[in-house]
Image 1 (tube, rainbow, N blue to C red):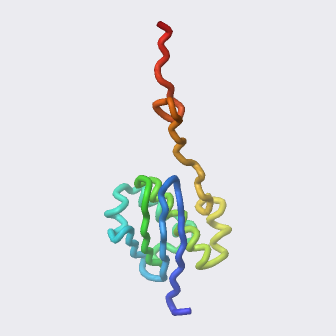
Image 2 (cartoon, helix red, strand yellow):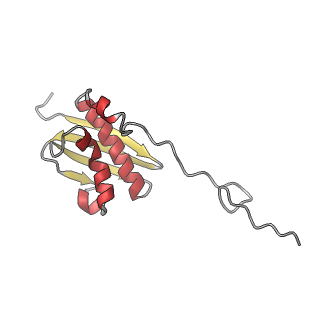
Image 3 (cartoon, rainbow, N blue to C red):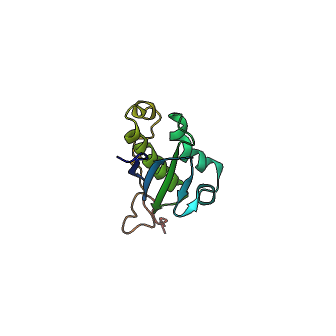
Length: 131
């Protein structure tokens, strides 16, 4: 193995899929060839992605390169967080015990319900007219 091993993993949320490569470094994050702050504009989304590093006390110890497709910004941030968490368990198996209670390793199964035929939406019905 090289001195700086790269650990890759995949994370998912809703229809977003993130592929992440974690390498020992200075904490630089690149998402879809954009800087971390540029791609995720709000502090909440940025904190969501950084959370796995904070839980295991490894902030600014790894560089992250992510490619994420599908979904919106919130789902993409969740997918990146899931992928980073999975990669950090590959770095050190002891990290699993810290992240599991936080729910970072659990794939969020909630998806948008499909639209049914003869209806305007998944649950919505056309207005009923008695007369």
